[in-house]
Amino acid sequence: MENAITQLKFYIEQSQNILIVGHKNPDGDTIGSVLGFYGLLKKLNKNVVAIFPDEAPEFLKWLPFYNEILIFDTHEKKIIEFLSTVDLIIGLDFNEKIRMGKIAEFIEQINCNKAIIDHHPYPDPFFDIIISDVEVSSTAELVFRFIESCQWINTIDINIATCIFTGIMTDTLSFNVNAHRPSTYITAAKLLSFGVDKNDIHQKVFYSYSEQRMRLLGYALHKKMKIIHEWSTGYIWLNKEELKNFCFQKGDNEGIVNYPLNIKGIKLAALFLEKENYIKISMRSIGNVPANEIISKHFVGGGHLNAAGGEEYNLSLEDTLKKFESILPLYKTYLLEK
Ligand code: 5GP
Ligand code: MN
Image (cartoon, rainbow, N blue to C red; front, side, top):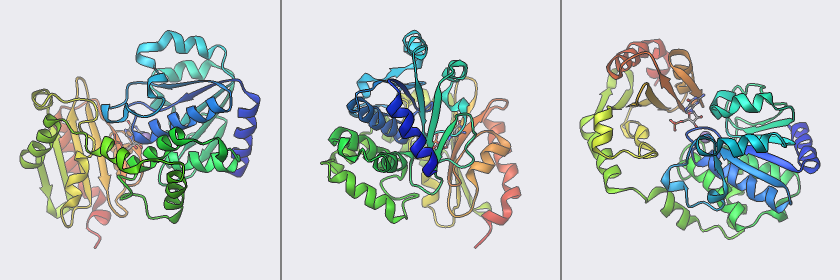
């Protein structure tokens, strides 16, 4: 990885027009990483454009630089124009090119240097330079490590630090998940020293529910959560009508999937949302239960061992739930392990 870091630093120094891209359905880690990197490159006097396939959820739109980014869905022409002049493309927080959505086709055709900084397992070598570490809390933490290795730490300011801190904070659910390594806290401490207001970020990210979102959560837990104790599994499912009734907004599902894990003995949790022409699945697990393998083998998608997501395109919501229940015995050794 040290080689990849040196190489990317060299490419950044040599490049003028740089594109930074995050993944679709952007979460706090991809957004914090992209915006932090964007702020850094601007201060290094680069002509930089930051893009996402689609918009951020409301609770992340307050982040510094968010109003400077381009969304592919609405700025396709401008982005394609910039691509014709681009020297370097940097992807943050994804390990498969399909996570970039439609923009992937255009990026593939461009002949320039391309790099990825990411913490997902099994990175697909679709870009030349891969800075990947699965043993890190978040891509944002890895971005910070990259900046430190390049000796650009003095370029960091409160805005850049706020973006990176938010990436770490959201991906670890406020330092609760995948946050057992000292390095995460050392990084967080360094970021705080730039003046980051942790309480303010926490307030904006976690205490920003609309009334409807809170009531949807209550409804989901009360009426739509099935607990299968014999398989140490719990899941929640919501159909189109329910989502409409609660005025579902992008990001309103954030966090719901984790709740079944709060029940003693539950090791695997899933959330199924009925979308227009597919079922969106989120999965979380504890210990060795491989959420990413369950998704990638039986649905379309992937992710980390304990946090994965994907889609089911061919079945109704009801049949997706049946399929999910029917595959649980395949994971008996993990689910029944004491
Ligand atoms: P969430 O359940 O919050 O949507 O996603 C949890 C994690 O699963 C993400 O951080 C990402 O690593 C992964 N993930 C979510 N959706 C997809 C998907 O469609 N494809 C892949 N490969 N990974 C996904
Ligand atoms: Mn992400």
